Amino acid sequence: MKPGHGEILLAEGDIDVRADEEALVEEFRRQLELGMWAAVPVSAPGGRREARMVRDFADVPRDADRVIFFPRAAGGC
Image (cartoon, rainbow, N blue to C red):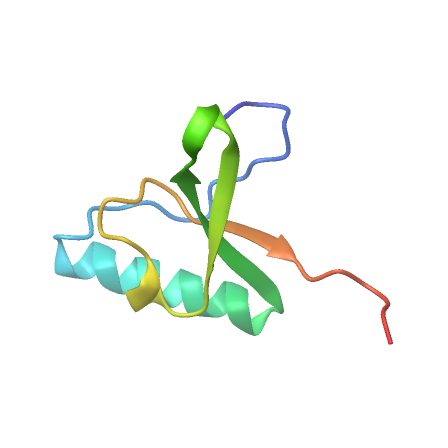
């Protein structure tokens, strides 16, 4: 995370520790209930920055070091 770049740490923990996993799942669900979308950064050819959308905590790869939450776009038809 880079200070000053809009990143906020919402939760962290060890997925192999049951209490941590429960806290991570709870925060993941809370963010989705607030209307946020979730994505996991993935490696891309040539060093490009890409992310894969996820809708459920079970879809987050166990080796992911972060999940990015962002608001849905406003407007549209």
